[in-house]
Length: 608
Ligand code: F6R
Image (cartoon, rainbow, N blue to C red; front, side, top):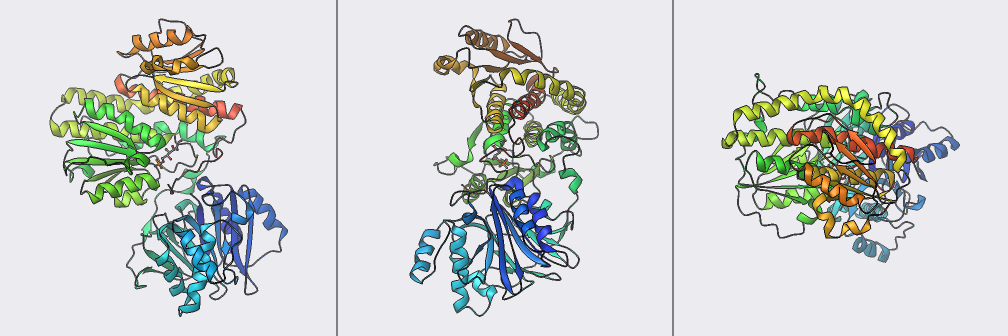
């Protein structure tokens, strides 16, 4: 849940590392710090708060010509957000500094051993334990590298860690276990970081490190070693195709707004190369090596989970496959009855690094059940470990709140449902062609209507900004959208919001409705509309205000009717989703909230 970066090269390392941390801030932003070597001694500068607080501190200290540094941006796991808990952490003897992303689960036990040997601790972090364990190892190992590996072999849990020491100036060590770490290989400079954007302006050549690997890097060399044996591993350097511009705001006030407006492009990219030349069939070669599952278990978290719930409707009705959808943190600790190899687990994850989703993948693998990964981030842990991966092609998603990634997941789920329906021969080809034609028309429809939707959100949001609570109601394929609308509102504007299946209101929740408790109703023009309208009337009978999102005529009056373009069937979700996102965006912006970096959240949840 943190971002780390290490640099060894020829440029001034501290500003470069701070700049890289800026591009990792989406991973955590409650404190930040850097370490470098000045006059043969480690110097560590850290600050609580956003990166700007660190920059202010660094501006106070004399310029450094260090060309090797490590840095960290933190999202608290052990210990409150405070300067003493910020990274880098140093060993007691000030000979080793490390930055760490992850959780050392047995840190308490390791700490007790170190305390008995006289080590002292100034923070509550597992990282300070790890750095002192390395220092302890240094007393008995011949080299720093061996001491690093010795300590890591005793650490259980997850880590991406980078280390520097005045003992070997100009050298960095790093290692990975169940947390992302990528090596960037440049000319006369090398990097390690939690994510590629950290160093992308300087090099596009990357090496994806695997669990149980250690890397030693200097300005002119890098070598990957096996953690257990310290023997060299053969690694491939790969060239990244996307550039920094794709990760910049492109003129929008916030990344979130840009990413919402990117959805037409995302749908186009998802369909590129995925349709037969006559555009009537689906091309998904990734599925060809996998059997069509008899039962599918979709496992994911948050927004990706909502995409899975939506996908279930398509997979069941088009491909006739029974589907269960489960939150990964529940799935991993339940006796999930995955019966045989004809079942399949589908894990959906934008980042491909979500700890619970990754754990679900491992459980499925242990039971020899094929795992299909739906990931956005190329080379991420889930993408690499799944039996097959389908990339969702959303491009880098920087805003913490996921928007365009869900859209891309939904396109891929629709294509997968059609591909399996075709293989099972349970779906008329004319109907498939019609659906593909609708999917192909979505980018133009959204491009045309997004500006008006944005204006509508700007007009409606201020009228509801004083609300303390909100209901989001939907039925059928709109129920997952109601859940997603509520999630977006609460995470961005900190207004309490609940998504409910409309029909469930009478079973309790309607007791909450009064004139201060508005409802956002998804009232799309489908077979369930009459029932949704009845539910709206029930809310109104309790003085509840109603915003209704609709793509057809509504036969009842509501406080705010929000008309969106009409898209047939379940694909109407592609028009409803940006409206929900824009409403939450405008509510948060109107209330002056930090849209791209909501409090208490991080983009990539790599711990439980
Ligand atoms: C909400 C949001 C989160 C993520 C969730 C899963 O806006 O972004 O709920 O969807 O943390 O993340 P991934 O998809 O990376 O596994």
